[in-house]
Length: 109
Length: 114
Image (cartoon, rainbow over all chains, first blue to last red; front, side, top):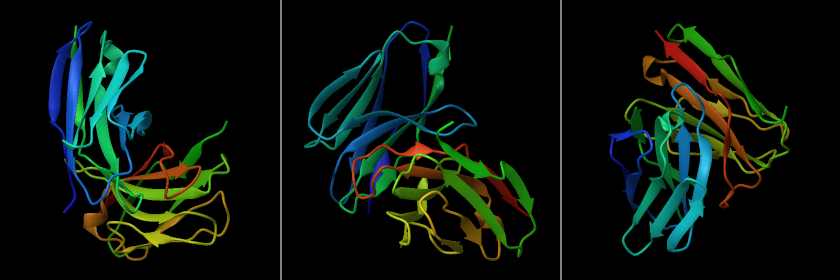
């Protein structure tokens, strides 16, 4: 079966750095996405990785290791507005997105 | 304003009733999707359409049907609602299906079936 694992919840302090991990086992791999979802709102796109390595985009970076079936999202200089759920999703061999349950990130002052 | 709209925002429905959730996009995207989101579970694909006139089944299609008569609209119909269909429903679109294009999501419809 296909499986995406992420921690259910994480807590971090404003101004700090947090790393949200995602491991996956899917039938095929055509890339990995990270989305942000604030409570009661729609998911919005953060990043896409298809090659191994780190992609940096402002305060957010995303890393991929295809051989390990592993990705992480790194958030730096945390702000209160970063409190949200972060969704990991893998594009499988049929080009359908398989979604993790999401990681709820709580930022404390 | 470009984007995706969904209607209604929320709905309470008696079991056995028929219900259509509406979705419209003005980005001229070829591909559209319907997901449901339940607490503790990831988004699950119900149906998708890679282009007007074609549709496909996702992970959880039973009890749902869709149509894609034109590029902009992608309605989702529950023929006879059951309580297990209580969920938040998101419509999404992307430039192309079967690709790495990011998906853009509508604001969602919160459906309660009693």
